[in-house]
Length: 404
Image (cartoon, rainbow, N blue to C red; front, side):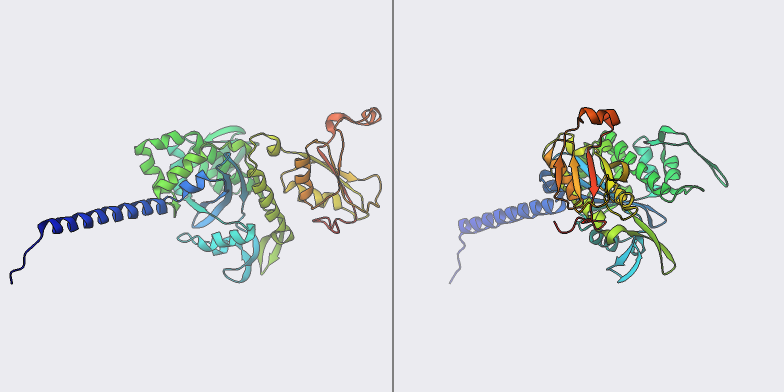
């Protein structure tokens, strides 16, 4: 029996298959676009984005900085992570310096240890090797930083940096961060690198328009090592260009140096509890929807020791400074038998006072007018009154108030 063909039916089947293929291709394309550019969703949300920047020199971190960025209100805070920070590294199960797990070709272990240390998730990691950093600096027209004291050093090389606002080209910028000068204080080199990092971010933001030029952008992005795709990099740097760098809350891990297995390591205070509290407080501040400057300003603190423990005010001052408060004076209280620690607030803002008291988990807050009475005016200038007075009592264990 001769078989007949229904051409209309065949054509219909062909059209259906074609439509299915087109729809499938569209779904796959949209999925890949969404998957390859997840930062769009992050930038549109109200969550904090945590970005690890690593300035790499000779395959080791010269500086590592976690930028906590709020796209919601274009504010940020930054934490400097010294490479010689010591702790039990979970990825190798021993006490060692943090950068011992750093690998130039794979930063996952280094990121993991920072996540454990700060108790936050690193969303993106951006690594810039110093040779490439030099090229980037020249591409964006230099980096301007403030140098508080002139630097003059002459040995095998001559190093000269004038004081004041100084614009550095690529070569000078790298020289500024890689050299450790004789007779510098312990953390001077780290402070210089922190100052440079902020200057670099600021110059990058101010000159982001240059990256709109294809001839510049095609040279810029290959100089950065990251798992982000090119589109995500563009969107992130575009968003960061709106940051007011001068108002970034910048902190570094505080601790004491100890010899561990022949290695001199920076052991964070209270096994990292302080820096984790700093991170949490910074993120709470960044999550505030208000755009005002109240929560961003630096508040002043007076610390008075109301106990018989010698040196308690000084040690507490180091703790409080770690939370970005300006300790303007320390001393002894009017007596040394205070049972309860007390915070005296003169800002007039309950939320601000609660944030300060939360640093040491103190619930005993007394509100006082900034304007002293007539008798007090005889003894002191009203302008010298701190925003807060912290009176240390016996219930303070050096880190928090216990028994609340």
